[in-house]
Length: 174
Image 1 (cartoon, helix red, strand yellow):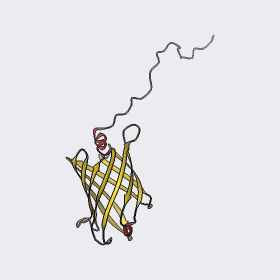
Image 2 (cartoon, helix red, strand yellow; image 1 turned 90 degrees about the vertical axis):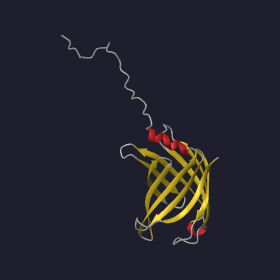
Image 3 (spheres, one colour; image 1 turned 45 degrees about the vertical axis):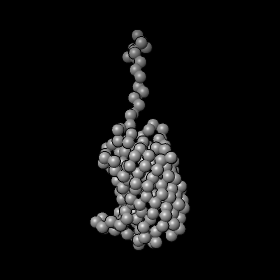
């Protein structure tokens, strides 16, 4: 007598395709940065040198799926601070840690990893770099002025208590 395999051919088929993930509301807020921007400002004099003017143009778009924002910068800086260059970056939101992320890679060989928060109309990005073998804490404050402009202030600290303004500027969406 033949054995039955236990498999029936008339079992209903189920769709095992997972439902498409939906970006969290925090992720959607990154859409503010999508588009083309121009940023101009001043680097103040300090331990890093005499300072001067800086500018960058930025082109930013959603990565497929709308979970991450990808951007490209072309920047102009004083020569003593590395001069002109390019940078690519990825912005996202970690729903487990409840923090925004920013990873940037420059044509000058630098990699920056920042964590961010958004409170009302102010973004705060924090990171750490090594300068002359010593850790330097960094923070970038972005104060939203309108859907198409924000002020920025980048500060540095050697001890986490006393902060020095490195640069200030304004970004405008084209």
